Amino acid sequence: MGMIDVGKKRVTKRTAKAKAVVRTGKDIIRRIKENRIAKGDVLEHARISGIMAAKKTSDIIPLCHPLPLDHVEVSFEVFKDSVVVNTMVTARTRTGVEMEAMTAASCAALTIYDLCKMYGKGIEIKDVCLLYKSGGRTGVFKRKD
Image (cartoon, rainbow, N blue to C red; front, side, top):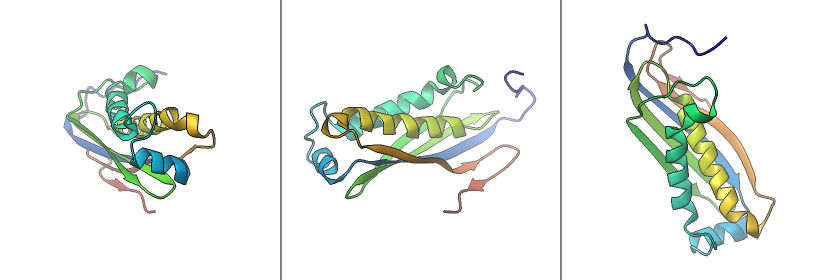
């Protein structure tokens, strides 16, 4: 048991997209939109947190390879009672970046929770999942939701 040997795999462009849903309730969404959260701009803090998490994935997921990432993108869709975190990670490497994309989505969602929990402990983080991946031997995956 241990890390998978990727030394003989070809270097290809790898892309992964993931999401997480943060259900907060209408009052907290209103506070986020009006930038009335005591700890600051929730979505910008969450964006930076997600980017940092993608870069550090191998430090927190035991058998992940450390990867030189080319790009990490974290964006948000704000609805009446929730925020959807969307992430995209790209790299030219020998193994996929799915874990980096899902770690970014998870950590950005946790950051939203942390910054907003003083306004309600009922916040839920749901539906963390891989939406898309390309590159490598297995090719393209697209979630069919």
